[in-house]
Length: 298
Image (cartoon, rainbow, N blue to C red; front, side):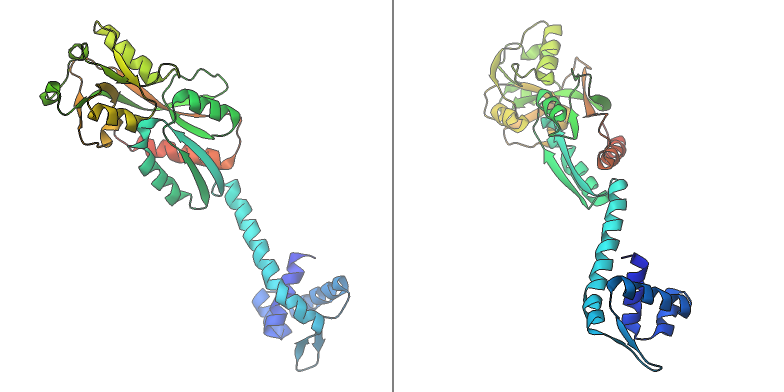
């Protein structure tokens, strides 16, 4: 059944008058009558009874009228949804965030994506180290990752979107917390709370590199994968740590953040995705994330 025939029928059924229906459809009355006759041939029964004064629905016409508007509405909705999906404005997307991005980037970015893509279901995964994100991107469990490079999987596309310095995080009771800046060498004799070494955390490697450059190897007291837990352990007095500047957005009583006085090493934040993923919603989300990150202070 052609859509224009159903639309013509619905209009005549609503107006009960061929002339008024033709005017609303912006066609002539004769072509409208031909459409109705064609539809009646397809259905196999008359849909209207016609007199010189009245147009009334037959029983078959009443049944069709009850469903025609729903059919036309569903068709219009399906067509609109198909166009929105093609424009990347409908669907579902899974995005992973490295731990430090949870406290600075994820809340604002999630709000921005929800505002601009209200019909897209956001599946957000926080506190994921780079190796875990790479594995999930490779398997298809994630569509986009915000992670710390390097990414040792050539099948993934990687794009740097931010660089930020490392800060020292110390227990507020430690004497060094009174200083406005911390020299890295001053941390040599203090236990460290570190990101995991077994999981090949990029930040674990960065902290070891900085400490080695300043003449010592960090004495790791405990390894923690979750950034919030790491800062909580520091607040409990278990040790100190070095974290990306974004983590300073996480306020935990008993922990203080201080800039490093004698190093300008930064850590990178990158977008990662499968370049062979042709999903419109992924393409659209990547575009919006790039725009969002470009407006942030890093």
